[in-house]
Length: 258
Ligand code: SF4
Ligand code: SF4
Ligand code: SF4
Image (tube, rainbow, N blue to C red):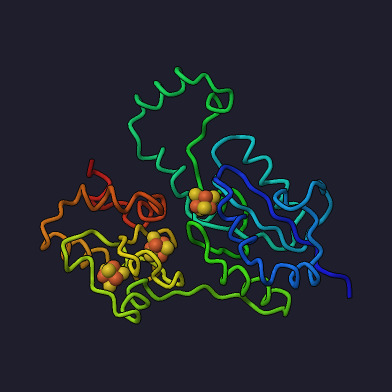
């Protein structure tokens, strides 16, 4: 049986997601013996323009060029995978959607950067093409990438972790940052990251996206009891998954908060 043809590509991102693939250094040679990697610029010079069985795409669509590249990748691929928070949720590049337009005009003028003249509203890749699977996170968890590749090779359906970060955080017996009066997005965010931030004393910023049954109302109430304002909470929530959260909270007072 021929090995599946696999490609790793990036739009606008920092390439940390692609690095997470390579961080599987102990297993990567095994993986490479089972899949036919046609393009992956970190580890090979070759370019490939043929059909792919599985195409991993890192990064956000920020301009027409990204959109064009993504469209062509979709046409060529049986399975297209959004790799990382930028591709899945827009992430930091999408913060521009919530920024003051005047400041952006200033940046465009000062930098006179060719690509910045072509700025669109940055969006996750699912806004442009059909996405078969998502591996969220900034960066995505390297074990999850490995698990995904193994399951796809076995012809299985890959399922994302769907419980909130709090579940894993509690399993590690961490103290709760919300109890300490901090804004932590663990209750609203899909886990699967082993609560890596909170276990190391950092707040969760929601890089893996929002749980299906997120209780925004209860969350706001809880943080307001801790003295946090709606605007403070909103700023925190917009960092990684702002587009998704804005969609879930459309037609609510959330839209008017600045
Ligand atoms: S998701 Fe994070 S690690 Fe991946 S490209 Fe975006 S900023 Fe970089
Ligand atoms: S620190 Fe954050 S992730 Fe951990 S239990 Fe508290 S709210 Fe949940
Ligand atoms: S704890 Fe939150 S911000 Fe940190 S990796 Fe997990 S989902 Fe992302």
